Image (cartoon, rainbow, N blue to C red; front, side, top):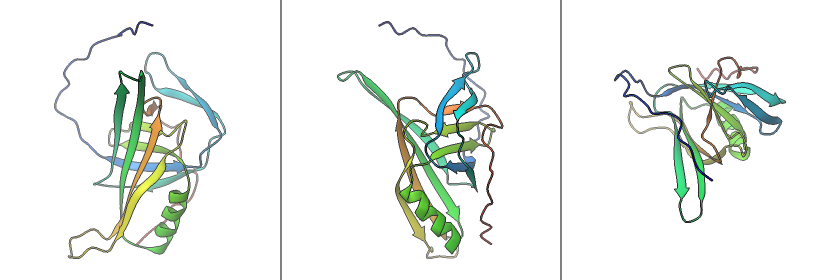
Length: 175
């Protein structure tokens, strides 16, 4: 089978700004597929039953990284989607919710500072692989939670049209 290239890419301006600002978690199962616009390559509709989306707001020290693993010998390619999340301020309700996420295999939607939304774990869900609950030692240290979630998928996370993922549940107010 021939693999056909479609286009090239110009060098962009140096105006990028990294980081993520919002993460939504949704119970795995129910989404049966997506419709991808052939021009924009973004998901325009989600088929099946959408889960309730639980919104976590973040700032700094959180990221989404996708690693491509391709094997010439095996003829395989897959994408490891890794979410690194830092939640400041220790309190009981967040800890309890993170314990539930650790046992689950949710869908995860991540929004960056450009408003791009990425749907992770569409086929297999995302899994909690590590984390910490830390009080910090010095006054300027993190007092909060960190977690790392991973998902292995056949495709990279989908870009979503704006408005497809909407929080429909209350948020914890930690202060």
